[in-house]
Amino acid sequence: MAGWIKLHRKILDNPIFLKPDLYQLFSYCLLRANHNETKIIWNGKEEILEKGCFITGRKIIAKETKQGESAIYKRLKVLENLNMISLKSNNKFSVVKVLNYSVYQGEEIDKEQPSNNKVTTKEQQSNTDKKVKNDKNVKKDIYGEKVHLSESEYAKLIVQHGEPETKQMISILDNWYLTKGKPPNKSDYHTMVGVGWVLKRFKEDQQKQSGNNDPASKPPSDKYDKFYL
Image (tube, rainbow, N blue to C red):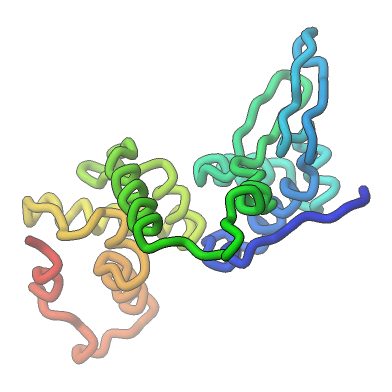
């Protein structure tokens, strides 16, 4: 396969960058995606295969990436939950679509970028306001008893921490909801990433389980009260 693709530096900020197999799979999707519309036969009918799409199957991807078939399926679903790709399948093959393909390849930027290569403060604020509004409108599902996360947030947590670890952190936050009866002053997702208190609590519990029983390292029972309203 000839040609090349563009790779934006923002990929460094994406959680999949720290997951080699997942990053390889998304890079593979970018490389395999067609850069022009193509006509195909789908379920006996002619359809247009959009730019950014390609036809494949798990066996093909597994062979070309040297990853297991079952792992390929799970990782494709993670990418789908992260809104990075979409999947459309029948009993023979699948169509993978790289979402925002034109943005990844810089085509929309090239078209819309002003000649002086500057964005006004007003435009930046407008984009920020839209993002905040959209974030508030994202549907949240309930995990455990009380924890609210979107599918995308849950997928990101699994990518960053692993599924068993994510479930343990959800359990920690669940227990706080049940005992304190009030929500954290940040979103449930943000308590489990970065400097979030649930993530800190989880790491402390892991240290205790690994044999660190130094009394000086044990936090007081009200240590996390400050994180609540």
